[in-house]
Length: 328
Picture 1 (cartoon, one colour):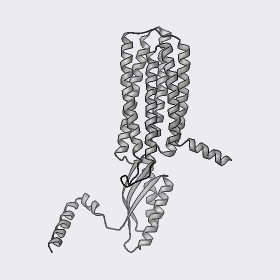
Picture 2 (cartoon, one colour; picture 1 turned 90 degrees about the horizontal axis):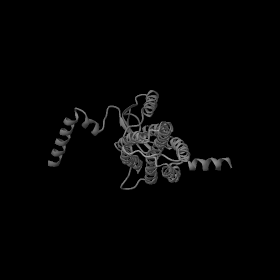
Picture 3 (tube, rainbow, N blue to C red; picture 1 turned 90 degrees about the vertical axis):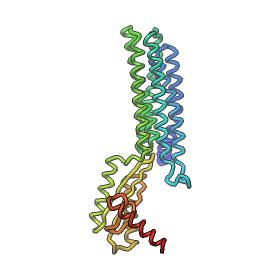
Picture 4 (tube, one colour; picture 1 turned 180 degrees about the vertical axis):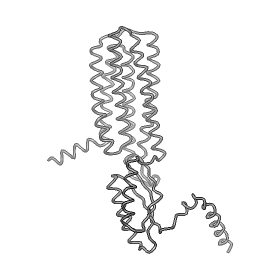
């Protein structure tokens, strides 16, 4: 019974399920914030409601990309579809920046033509209620994003947190306008909100671009890989590791490296050590796909030689030999 409950709980914490909940919460907050804006006429609450529409669009697109990322590898995408999640972060970034421009436009017009605010008590209660929903969901989503290493889920969670801080700023602006009587304070806070979410949008676009350009694993993970390889190099006399490179693709991580073994080793012995290291890397970093190329000590691949200073000479010699062979 307890196992089934744990299974059900873990199922709900998976990215695609949380994103479905995010869509529902976005619809609920749109209703609450739009009602709060309608009651008060506050441009700050209008900006908050507009950002909730962005949340809805972002959550729907993130859900689509997470679904695509789960597809298995095929003939046209032999490395899988994991990078689809980065499109979600970029898309949300563009939407956030577009919403910031709309908010700034509305705030500037209200700044030059302030309007009285009405029924603040109800509007504040509705705004704070939607903020609680977004805050709780964002907290759960961030925990799940770390567990499943989902870029799309992390992006949507950070977007929700931006919405939380935006709502807090709007509430402060409303209270300040009501307390001081300066109606322009509401519009000024809306402008600050616009700048804030524009910065968040640019950050999301930057993170998306880094993922699409095969960004390396985080430094702690790279250090963990280096430490593990050093331990095997010390235990296995004559074994050398080099050309270690890594990249991230959504929830999957990849590392490529060369393992140089003594020339007298049998193929079976080298293969057994390679399998052991692959299993150790996977245990150290869940979801890591390791590709280890086995070479004799002192030998490099053609691409390695070509990348070095001797690569040009090697290529010329190989080309000359090939031409002579074809003539013969």
